[in-house]
Amino acid sequence: MAIINYDLIVVTDDKKKKEKYNFLNGEEVVFNHTRFKIRLINKFIYSETGLDRLMYDGVIVDVRQFEDDIINTLLFYNNQSEIFIFDYKFKPNIVNRNIKYFYELPNLKDLIIQFFYERRYNTPFFNALKRLARSKKQRWHTPGHVGGEAFEKYTSVRDFKRFYKNNIFLTDTSVSDPSFGSLLSHNGIFKEAEKLLSTAYGTLYSFINVHGTSTSNKIIFMTLLDKGDKVIVDRNIHKSTIHSIIVSGAIPVFLKANFNREFGIILPTRKEEVLRCIEENKDAKLLALTVPTYDGLRYNLPEIISLAHKYKIKVLVDEAWGAHMHFHHDYYPDALQSGADYVVQSTHKVMGAFSQASVIHVNDKDFKEKKYEFFENYMFFSSTSPFYPMVASIDVSRKLLSCEGKMILEKLKKYYDQLVVEIDALNDFKVLKKSYLKDYYDDKNEILLDYTRILVNFSKAGIGKKQIYSYLLRNKIVVEKINYNSFTLLLGVGTTQNMVKKLIKVLKDFKYEKRDLGEKKIQFIWNDLEATIPPFEAYQSKGEWIDLKNAKGRISSNMLVPYPPGIPLIIPGQIFTEDLINNLLEITSFDEIEIHGLIKGKVKVLK
View 1: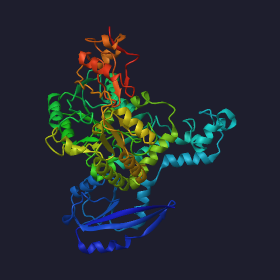
View 2: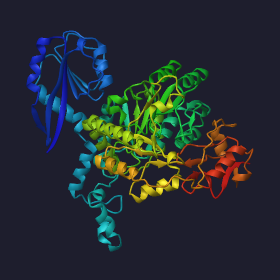
View 3: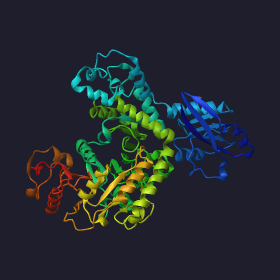
View 4: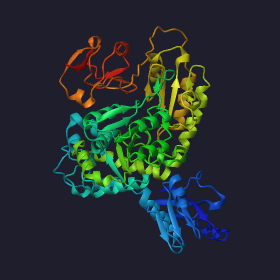
């Protein structure tokens, strides 16, 4: 039987009232094969104690009079919490599905657990798939493996089923089974799972997407932008943002960013530059930011989003690497709490869902005016045959972070701190710290860190990428990415202390002799992506394929994106310069770097 600790606080303005809640502390309730233990972690008077640093699952508000700011504070710092308000004289002007109102004390412990289960612990889609696996239904519909029978029947592929076992096949079904509803129509059990997502993140609406956050970006761009509309975007963007610009026909305005050559990364744009760009482009329809970056750097968003909204500019935050941040106050305020209208997330990167799992959060008060365009674009970019186990993995990862997220993220922070200290103590390695960025930003709080990423520079080792890559692989360690002078470690919900110990030991045992290996170290040229013609026009125009070395002065018809790091060096509509061509030719000499858009040394340019 699973055991869940439920941490509860009491907010009251009367010392005498506090004692009546002692009966809750330590009480256990069994509900749906789960034992919930209520732990009363704090009883205090609101005016004497701040709320912002406490983490809790539920809160009882028992005051004679209170104002909206109390509830707003509770919701802001612990958006996951259930709030039970009773014995009140004035109902606050707040509508939130996490709040329950009572005039007198109910059977509170049972209510708390039931409410907790319904909002967090329940996984309607996963539960439905478990029922399907037990149902023994005859399947005269897709997929044609018929619950895995094909892989059991034919000896040439029997090892496939034996490797994956039964349930992955039994739960691979389709919309032909009406008991699930439809993901494209967002009804049935899909809708139940999406409602729980919305509750977990405190949104107006949340939608499941099984085609990755690259597709989620395209859906939002196509919903909000018409051909010729202006969009302000990061320089530090994923290529899906450029694809989104192309398919929507939008005109991009790129934020200027700094490049940190020591670690080989593009840094987020300075706040004053973002604000300046918004002021100079008040006619923009959308501001699209990437927070956090691939390397774990975050904007401090509230002031930026506030200015965008002043000019009625919608804000989309690509939080692909930050789906976990909503579940711990170390990351507050996240994009949703900062007021973003749309947030797209990859729930597989840190949270543990299957690869390609994504969600779209909507907090746009004007969404009803765009909802038909949204659903049309959702269908436009989606398959009619979603993989149901992937949907279940989103359901389950939401449950995991809702129930145990704060504990998991605190554990990951401890691993982060341990790794930073021990790796930084080694002569051959240097870990990126916030203090190293002080020359780029005026305010120390302008840029924040995501503690699930560690960027390690290995330049001091006197080696190149090939050597460190081979050494790590020989020791059965695969990292998130390696560029010419650094590698990135990702800490996910499945990271363990044993993994941390092994990694530290492997790095301590690093024995390469410091020497000039004769290996070139690549330096990317991150030009401003200012196109001479709109990207969609260049992309759709007739083009020709020519040798890269002959492309000087020609207008690119596609993107060239080195992987890693996956950030475009040139986009459709931009002119090839001699420096850029030389840089690309240099990059091609590295076997470990793949350039998307470069095919057998040729690039596509306008005729």
